[in-house]
Image (tube, rainbow, N blue to C red; front, side, top):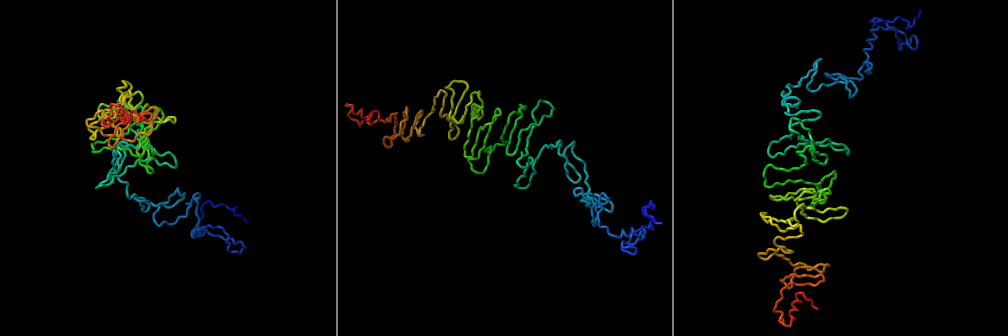
Length: 457
């Protein structure tokens, strides 16, 4: 009776080595062209499989490694490399070793206990000792340090190392990283920790010094230069260094008042200092009088401040240019006492000489001598006007008379007066011996004609 394979009783356990299995030997065509049915023991089948080389990869999902591994030739650890999404061999690094089935840390992690207190930052002194930076801590992404110094150097004439404080680099045309300097605000007496207030901001090429309006003890923005010794020469310098045309280099000082920013002072590389008009101020630059030498300071003043001397430069409003002024102004007192003094030091700078006084009652007082194209005065001169020879006028302005010095003969200069009509009067003493007929009056007329008092008609 023939029975199909699927009708046979199933074996409920692993086959024994002598159990028989049915197979078709395709190489034997005795029974048919497709092969001849034969029997084989379970042991012979398993031996044949073990003897053949398996060249495929068994996927992870099928219980394999998903990789075709080779003999590494040394102790390795099988591990999953997530970055490569594959199983491979792991090589142990420095300080670790594999002996038989044991993984050993040969280098060791060192000994020692943390130093300092609380959250102070630790550092290694040597292989077994730790130190702590006193007063340091780290909290909320902020590093707190009491002091920061660049590394010192040793040896003769060695350049010092640099200390770099940098804001975060930007990409493209985005806003650059900012370096912010803060100090604590001043509060009332007590133990309350005061808020840190921004004092200086460095962004790109802009340096901004700020003020805490609530801090009444330091409510000002200051840039101070100081020194602790008495050198032979003390020069505090602010430099604007550029390349290119010198006249184009400028250092600009600006003032902001009532949210309006205007240029107060422009310093050009070609030697010019320009003071600009500030609309919210009555004056721009002033010299404030004092009782001690040198007797004044330069400051910016607002309207209403009394007893100050102003230096007002030109300004332009609505395309109209106003004249330069050297001005002295008082809020009280008489015009005669409102004086602008022009003072010059002697060559040795030992004495300050009052040269001219310009008074509020429109009087210009020359203190000693006045020279026009002349610096020479006669012996013991005081209150003398000296006029040197120049070029005589070639025309007569309307409603004006002109006075000048000119030689009437070589080496003999005298005062000349030109009238509006063009006539010139020479103030020169005439030689009496040149006129002998005084009785007939003709010599008197001739002398007056020679002086220009009479015309020649």
